[in-house]
Amino acid sequence: MYRLVASDMDETFLNQEHKIPQVNIDAIAEMRSKGVLFVPASGRAYHSVLQSCAAIPKELLEGSYVISYNGGCINKISDDTPITSHQLPFDLVKAIYDWAMQFDVGFHIYETTGKVWGSHLQQSEIDYLRGHMPYTDFTDDSLSFLKDVPLAKMLVVKPDGMPYLRHMCDIMPKDLKDQVTYTFSSNRYFEFNPLGVDKGTGLKQLLEILHIDPQDSIACGDAQNDMPMMEVAGVGVCVSNADDDVKADADYVAKASCNDGVLKEVVEQFIN
Image (cartoon, rainbow, N blue to C red; front, side):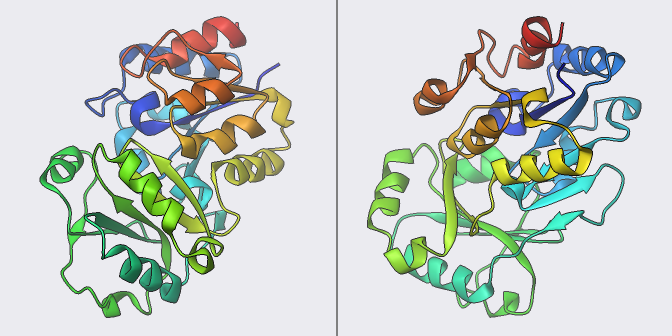
C-alpha cells in the first residue's frame, strides 16, 4: 500500500504557467482520504514552495512535509524550523562563481532562510521568475556581502541553454566538481548542492523519519534533479514532458504532462 507521494514542483506538479491544475488538487484530496501524504519536493526554498501551494486547501497538507533545496532541507508544513538542513560553504560558492563568470550565464544564490539573490540574469530568466519566485538583484561580484551568511545552494543560469551548461560541467575543474553535488533542471539551471545532498537523500531521510518503507512511496518528476528521488521511491513516475534521460530511468512514463495534472494519473494507476 502506498503511503506517500512526493512530487517535483516546476514542470511536474505545476503547469507551465506555474499554477496547479485543479485535477492535481482533486487527486490530493483523494489521496488524503486514503491516508496517503502528498509531499512537494523542490529545488526552491520552503516558503516559495508554500506560496506555489496556496491554492491547495490547508487540510489537505496538514501533517505533511516539504523537501526543499533539492533535499537540502526538510520542513514540516507550518513549521519554519527545518527538521534537517545542509549548507554550502561560502568559499566554495565564491570559487564556483568566480570560475563561472567567464561564461555567458546568470546566477542564483540561496540563503538557508529562503532569500534568493540573482545576478547577471537574462531577460528571459527575469520573465520566467516574474510572479513565480521572488529574488533580489546584486551587483557585488566579490560576494563579500554573503561571507557570513548561511548558504543552501547556488545555480548557474542559461535559459534554453542545456547543451551550453552541460559543456560547462564537462570542463569544470575537478577540484570544484568533487566538492559538490551537481545536477540540471528546467532546461536552464546547472545546480550546486552540498556534497551528498539531493532529492533522493531528502526523500530517504523523510521516509526514515516517518517510518515508511521506500517501496511504499511514489516520486514524480521531469528533470535530472528528480532522478535520485525517483530511484529511492518504490515507483518513479515522470510526466510526458520530462527530459529523455528521465523517461529512460522512470518506472512509469505518464501520458499526462504538467499541464494535464499528473497526480490524477498516479492515483488511477497506483493508489486506486
